[in-house]
Amino acid sequence: MSGRAAKDTAVPVVELLDATKTYPGPVHALRGVTLRVDAGELLAIVGPSGSGKSTVLNIVGTLDRPTTGTVRVAGYDVGSLSDAQLSALRARHIGFVFQHFHLAPGRDAVDNVADGLLYAGVPLKERRARSRKALERVGLGHRLGHRPNELSGGEKQRVAIARALVGEPSLLLADEPTGALDTASGAVVMDLLHELNAEGTTVCVITHDNEIADALPRRVRFRDGEVVHA
Image 1: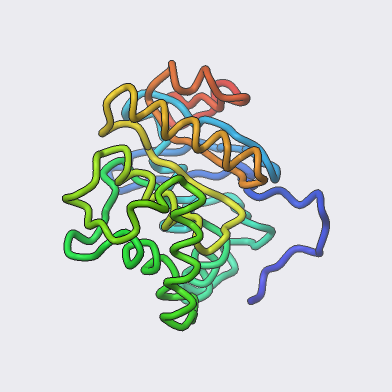
Image 2: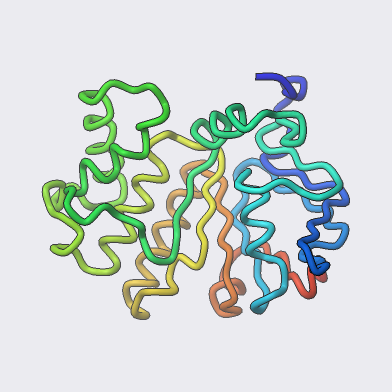
């Protein structure tokens, strides 16, 4: 893959330099954002609806490209990569956790997590073995054969986190991870994200919830497409 920065332990996991994103209208979703996230950080990207945080999620997750500026993820210049190379970058370096889980209803926890390795060229037997380990890591070793309709909301989110982690990404992007959960289940999920970060995973939580954001070591606040606090 081209666009790789020179190997350096100080290379940030995420780096945005004067990044903008404009949609037809025009709508200026991002306005000259500069942001650096280093390996091992646990941070919140926080702001109200329309602040630009979802656009940042899409750009950092390589699901979208900036209109102008530079975006680097795991040392790769996103703007220099083809769509196929971006897909490979996501598969190797980025894990996603979404508010509504996105689990396949007819598949048990093992296969839902194993699906996270579908595009990594891992044989089925190894996918399932790694899936079991990931589920044990998030405390669901006793729920391996259960389908989503047999799991609580908090358990579904932990399956989703295991799926995001099974490929051992350098960056975990959690988009409103407690938004569909009750308070107790949400607390369990946030405790898990803290534990994963303590084990070395870089975790970025995208949220509108100031209480969740304020409990994290770093807060990057967005308003009107701009960083107002980093």
